[in-house]
Length: 412
Ligand SMILES: Cc1cc2nc3c(=O)[nH]c(=O)nc-3n(C[C@H](O)[C@H](O)[C@H](O)COP(=O)(O)OP(=O)(O)OC[C@H]3O[C@@H](n4cnc5c(N)ncnc54)[C@H](O)[C@@H]3O)c2cc1C
Image 1 (cartoon, protein in one colour):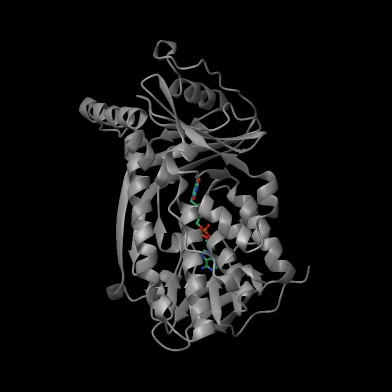
Image 2 (tube, protein in one colour; image 1 turned 60 degrees about the vertical axis):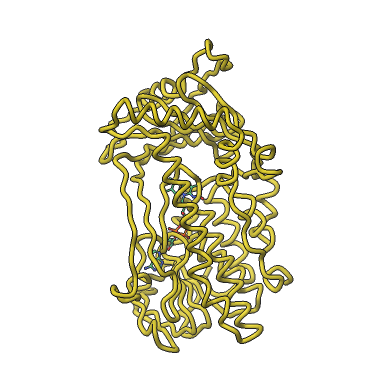
């Protein structure tokens, strides 16, 4: 296919073609708002990048509402709960019972991205792959501009608004003067070794395992592909983890003690097709708007993946933003746009809290004392035995309700 020509003028310039940028483009297109997406990588890279896999109900509803739900509805795996393992025990959390009917859907981020790209290329606004934003200028003026490299030359895209959906390492955040933004951060003294394996998952639902040897998570991408994670020290080289070591460690960390009444469990092993180490970080940049530059998704905030919130927060941000830009387009009022940052940050900090809670409750820090471990086990026991504690986890995991997709966005 011939690559599209450079774009020089648009209403909303979207930097980054990950889930946030692609979903925003879709929502704006359906509202009749002109936009263009610049993505620095090529299509194949973006479609293959292994990341999130758990969609909150609200994210599923937004994807459906903007026409990206057909394959998700066919292939997504609806999950009604998760299993917690600790101290040899196994405890299932029943989400619909605890939350009044909410569930999550397992559908890989790679598939969400593929669906959105296909729609965008079929009938959407320009989506330029291999277009790297270099700088953004004029954030506090009326006509911000993005300078970008595309097909070996530097071009300028003039916009009414620029939205940074360019992830944690993106450039748009830097368009906000240092004195006008503040970043709140926390690091963690451990990482995840993530593996993909061509083997059916060993359980129907996700298993979150606390163990004296560290955390383990048993997840899946499809009925035939497992996605598995092990807590490892920062700086771990995946080469130090041959396949047998990965499987042995997963099995040991999730072992149950039949004396606790837990049902026997056997881990299915198979060929490992990918292995990578992911550092963990919490970070929020405030505010999420400066003049005519807005930030959304990982460009504004990062969560450790334990709470499965990153992709869902990105979807929530751009839903709020699409509503605000649609309101401006149809009424001329900037009221919702002015509230964008505060509206998003409330949800962002709730998700930050939950993600940090899940992470610190389930992982074993290198300097963790036996006292700290007892506190973790007391918390997990509380979740397993007190419905209010279980409901708190289930409500956060399945996600707070999203603002409704603007009628204008879903009507076309
Ligand atoms: C291992 C792992 C597991 C995860 N699991 C979950 C989960 O279960 N549930 C969940 O909700 N979240 C999860 N997350 C988080 C989730 O993947 C991210 O939060 C999500 O990708 C954010 O989407 P985004 O579009 O904001 O950013 P990104 O996906 O990072 O997209 C940003 C895009 O911008 C492009 N870009 C960057 N710089 C430029 C530039 N200068 N010019 C043009 N383009 C640029 C990048 O190439 C990229 O395509 C996980 C993350 C990881 C790493």
